[in-house]
Length: 212
Image (tube, rainbow, N blue to C red; front, side):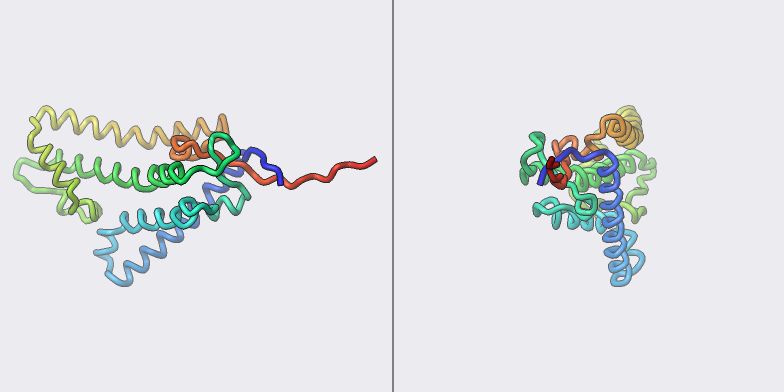
């Protein structure tokens, strides 16, 4: 069976199908937690449940060397830059990490840092009163951030707060810019796949030779 380049339309349908299945998995896990632990725990752990659901989806497919449901739906397979070999486990692990774990920790890190910088003079910690911050509010990361923030001057805090704001605005813009590049070149639908160097090919049915 011959292989050919996967067109942008297939990549888009693959991404949409994977997102649909991932959303269903997140919803099911969230519903289970809500039924077992109640609404308060669900709200507190919602983002962590979503992260675990996404990691489980890709661990059972991409990391295990199988197609995702979206890839299977449009009949495409992952290849490395040579377009002849399946991506190594390291490449696949980098993709899964960049696609799921890194965005989570980046979001939580910036969120915690922003809240710590916005602590009012009376010492009230708005971070502790926000259940949506979830598990990260009890991690060593938060303690480390608090320690670093306490050593900053007021001017440094204002400067860093501006940088955090710019970063939070820049990340969605970077994704939109990358999507625009994809629609021009039609190669990498996800930024994480571009960084990991994962491409796609499609199975082509062999056409019968014409006979005279």
